[in-house]
Length: 161
Image 1 (tube, one colour):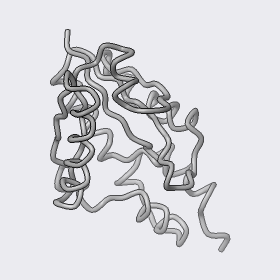
Image 2 (tube, rainbow, N blue to C red; image 1 turned 60 degrees about the vertical axis):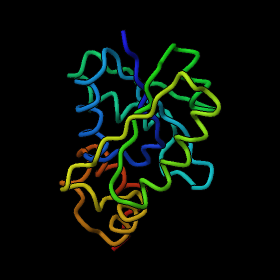
Image 3 (cartoon, rainbow, N blue to C red; image 1 turned 180 degrees about the vertical axis):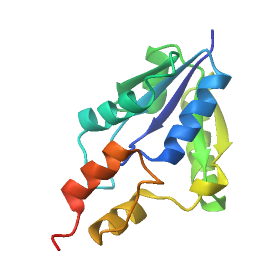
C-alpha cells in the first residue's frame, strides 16, 4: 500500500489545492493532507480551522485523511510509513523552490520520493497573498476557494465598507 503526503499551510484552502488533493487521491492508496504552519507568514486561520475546511471539502474521498503536522515533513512521513511526498507546481518559480526542498528531503530521508503535479491552468495564478489582498478590498473569490472559506475570509479580512 502506497501512502502519500500532501503537506502545506492551506491558509487559505483553495480550489487549486482541492484539485491536487483529488488527483493525488486517485494515484495513491492513501493520501494524508498534512496541515502545517508556514513559519515565515502570519496565518489567517488556526491549524484546527484549516483542518476543518479541508475535511469538509474532501468528505467524498474515502482514502484521504487530514492531520496537523509540526516539525519536519519527512519525520512526519516516516512516522506514518509514507513514501511519497506530493507537491503542486504553478510555475517555474515553484519548480525552483520545490527542487531545493526535494533535494534536502532526499538527503534527510532517501526512501521518500517527491512527486510534483502541475496545477490546473485555471488555478495557476492563485496564491494565498493574492487571495488575502482581494478579500481585503471586497473581491469575489467564490470561483477560487470553497464557499465556507470565502465566507470565513470575508469575516476575518473583508473591508468594513
